Amino acid sequence: MAQNGTTENRGTKGIAALPLPQPVKVQEVRHTKIFIDNEWHTSSSGRTFPTFNPATGHKICDVEEADKEDVDRAVKAAKAAEQRGSPWRRMDASSRGRLLHKLADLMERDRLLLATLETLDTGKPFLQSFFIDLDGSIKTLRYYAGWADKIHGRSLPVDESFMCFTKHEPVGVCGAIIPWNFPLLMFMWKMAPALSCGNTVVIKPAEQTPLTALHVGALIKEAGFPPGVVNILPGFGPTAGAAIASHMDVDKVAFTGSTEVGQLIKEASAKSNLKRVTLELGGKNPCIVFADCDSGCGGDPERSFLQPGVENVKKIVIGDPMDPQTSHGPQISQQHFDKIMDLIESGKEEGARLEYGGAAVGENRLFIQPTIFSGVKDQMRIAKEEIFGPVQCIFSFKRQQEAIERANRSQYGLVSAIFTRSMDRALSVSAALETGTVWINCYNALHAQTPFGGYKMSGNGRELGEYALAEYSEVKAVTIKLSETL
Image: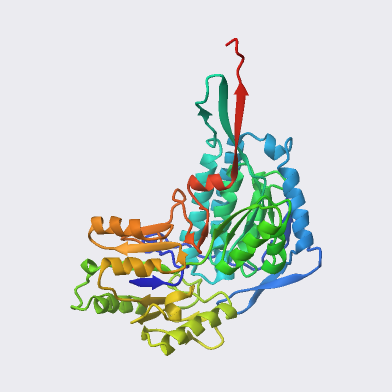
């Protein structure tokens, strides 16, 4: 039973067969201000903050820092834009869909620039940014553009002297707080269904990675969205993020990030206006590999799994994220780097066998070798805590039920995976696992049509697919008393 402590690597299978795009040269980042009401603003406090390239440690630029006063301005603009009689509310549903398609067209046009900015800001390999993040972002927009004029209620069979039907209406002003690992993709996962349902949004990108969100602000204006429909506030969690979560005029918050911050957001919702909250939080994702997948490397299933795994990890290229050959970039920050290295050291100290990696790469840099531990025990920190870095923990099990029980013992329940040649076994185990997603003979297979979200302390609610629409709409029942003469 393997646990992958990161959700950063979505896989790039098939990329090598495509013509390789090249990053563009970014001499100067154009959009660094706060985006409110389709206009660019300096922060109310006058403060800015730097954003860095984690691969080099060099500052990319300074960005305006939003705080509570800026959040108030953005929410006011969003609330005005969603009022009855506003251009956005008067717009028919098909026109909303056309705007989302137009935004997708503009992102296609700027795809190289957006992928370059994403790589500069996150350190992820450029080809992953281009083929995975941009592709997924554009597909998400087009998927929800298609839904815009298909969100409808039902007529309900009731007593014959009544007629009853339901309507689906926008929730109102929706806040979105975005993580640093997929800045652009998570932006689209939250914004696209919200706009498809007719809401307005106030978005805070992660302070480590604000650049692609701000560029999209320019594209939103160019696409023709009315002022106030989308507002983008670069800033910090304890100030801008907390102000969104506790704002009395924000009707819903969607957050992706740590379980600890998710708990704070739920608390802020309860203490303010009981706003809706959807959360995609931490994970410790079991990947269960059964013996019938034995590669033939020996009689010991654990060693049979390990040997080819270590050989594959040795082929991973660590280096400049802009280089097409690179498949593994740096960690996002010194703080996150230190957290991962601390957990790696705990694995060594608690008796896990370090099969490969476990060290930093280069001096004064944020690169960590892909790391594999075997002989991991359930009580070890690396077995229980979310590492969110390039560390794989290998456990062994003897019985199917044992694997299920140990996987379900986690406080998390985001995703899991099963590898077996027996589909009967795969379906039986998938039914027993307490996770929001189960992948069978695959991993990180994400689609705009497929709901994503967690059980237990991995969060509440679902993103993507038709299921996400329910998170961004209110259902109103209308009952009419019919004339008795009928």
